[in-house]
Image (cartoon, rainbow, N blue to C red; front, side, top):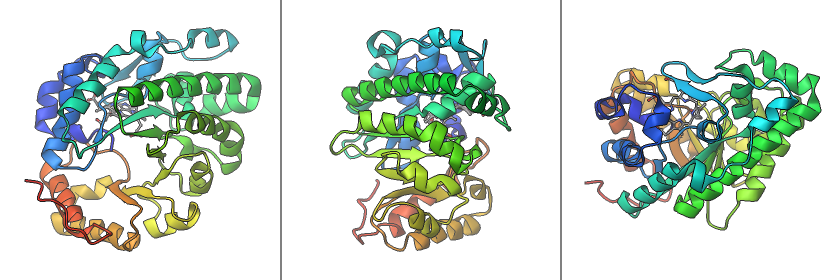
Length: 330
Ligand code: CP3
């Protein structure tokens, strides 16, 4: 999950204090920052060190990521004229460092640890461009979607194209799975999600689908939206910690694999409690082979890496649904 590195002293030492966009633009550094949590935790997949705002920043929309805050925008998106500021992405020219990072990782990762590429879903990126900073109410975003529906769809269409181009370029460079983060979709009613968001996320999955490439879809607080989100075309549904995994299964199509969903904040408790919560996730999965164990959202910087290491060990020891023992991580 996002920001696994943040809990690591080696991440803080290497990351430096500049904007994260500079760290992402340094392919050797971004490669190393991707590898750190893989080495430390022995997880089964790597997630590319990048950010959901990289494509919009790279085409010059004027976006940065403020430490402790998140994405901030110089001149937020307000009108039709702003559409011109969202030209198509040319990955080789605009984000060559992302492609270099992916290629470095394909070279440096163990062969059995696939790299997950990712993009922000149109809605979540739109919400940052319109609000100009992280929001708790998404007031401007909702005002635009309901007040100027043609402009809303035009914006979402461009952001879908950016995600499609970015994801294709990551796959072409060697990523083996992709994840579409619609982190803030959970602020919407199912009616609004279906009308204003779903067609655009569906366009992304339809365009990116390749045989044998898993596509994961994730949002926070999306219990009420899981069924709709699962219909957008992803092959794996991410679940946050608010929905018990067994309940989540009833909300997605039969057989759809789930990713999740240990509450990351519970990992701040003593180990016995963390172990119990981890086992509860496994128990609710009840041996279903379609489960990618994960946290229900990002790692907080305060979390003890030792505890997270123990979570991975426990899941490796007890979590294989098919009963096959995992190779000794050493
Ligand atoms: O796990 C990883 O390190 C993979 C790389 C990754 C980052 N961002 C790097 C990052 C991924 C997959 C993301 C996705 C992302 N970025 C999402 C979607 C996933 C989710 O967790 O919901 C969102 C909403 C963002 C936007 C964003 N970027 C936020 C809200 C923040 C937090 C700001 C803060 O400091 O608390 C960021 C910053 C960010 N992106 C960090 C990292 C490692 C942490 C701070 C840093 O090192 O600068």
